Image 1 (cartoon, helix red, strand yellow):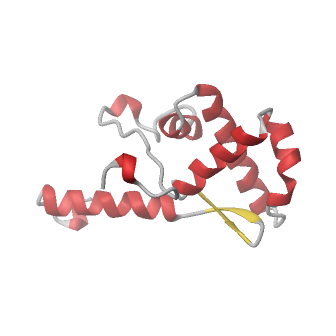
Image 2: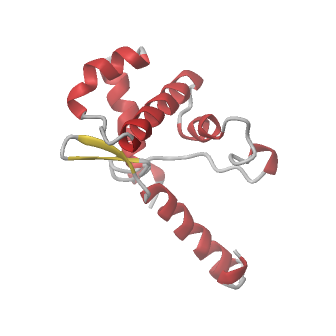
Length: 132
């Protein structure tokens, strides 16, 4: 499937092979990851703030509700349309879900990347899965 033909629930992310761009070794892993998802640095920072808000509220047992969108856009300092575009990208990447009116951190993003990594490592590179 070509990127332009991807379903609306999909998104694109920048993949870098150079270790100096490693997310895990970054001083700001969330920020580094968001910069791979969003082209604009300000949007990347807002995406990080939104993910952090979703995570904190979920951990505190008070999930962020979709009905709080007015407060969210005020907190993030963005327009209604910018918020929904950012949210769509995070949902499309599998980083968050929206179920029963609540935002939650999702593991779908990790599972998809892991699936791709396993396939590449074993089928294309010919390595044993245990060495990944």
